[in-house]
Length: 427
Image 1 (spheres, one colour):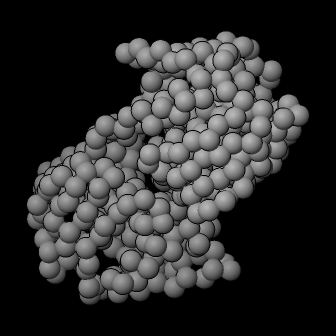
Image 2 (image 1 turned 180 degrees about the vertical axis):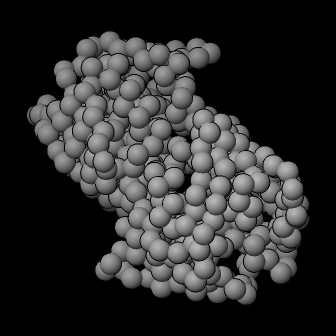
């Protein structure tokens, strides 16, 4: 599958139900190695979940996925494991298998280096490896894979992250399960997906106590008991904002976005409200009703570490700013300073912008008349959805290329789009 085309657009209205969070589901699937059996509900149907499930199957895990549920049954793992480079390279979150294999007590393993979004800059794993080395893992790095020897790791640790990396936090929390006594880790990430992992870990017997906003005490399960657990994955906050923006740009009148974790999207909602976007939040019903944007007072968008607006929102919200801009507006991203290639793609159909490193300026979006097909490349997952937002203006005329990226994070996108009046075709 290489491209996505919007074939037809009717009156865009109705309801779109948000799926479970990709960035929760994948670490949770890795952490399931600490259990005997894990049933996850409210899960998305994604390429990445299938790939990770296939990876886990290679080490003996029984993986089944039906509707919105994932079930993983974990055997007694061997002391030595090898996961090939070919499989691991297909997704970024295979990195979290490092913590999962350490946490599950695997003595030695080989793991292929991970893939995923990298077009907006390098995503090194040195923060992860620094931690593992500090607890006594002997690590040998190769061009395409990495080897761990965990036979002499410590019994406890007191560690401070130099940056609150989400991935490294996942790895540290999961790997602590193999420790013999309580551990302290400071300056962790506190994204909602991390809190979701914490709640799961407590179900498998790992106690995580917050001693300050970003510092935790982790008490491992020293009884070597592997329970069977059920866990509801939180809904995807990035997907929720993506469809809210779609409604603001394209709905005939309004669009209902349901199954939303309202408390986890407060920051982007506050920002959108500051622009003058018309929407109604129904917290108890877990839905947001957004109305088509009219005159918006666009403001600079700066992303950062949670609880700031996250970098993953950036390409999608930027399309709304371009759509509504009546004055120059800056988009600032110190997390991934090169995450602006999607702006260069949008220039093909009328975006006026100045693309920089760490900061770009959007001037206007004056959609061109086009008669022949135009290809807009998906440089990463969220950029792919940003290109889709533009393609809706041009039924049948824009190919969103490298659309496999979109399928990495937007569950059942064909069905959901059809339900609200947008017919798309994946080829």
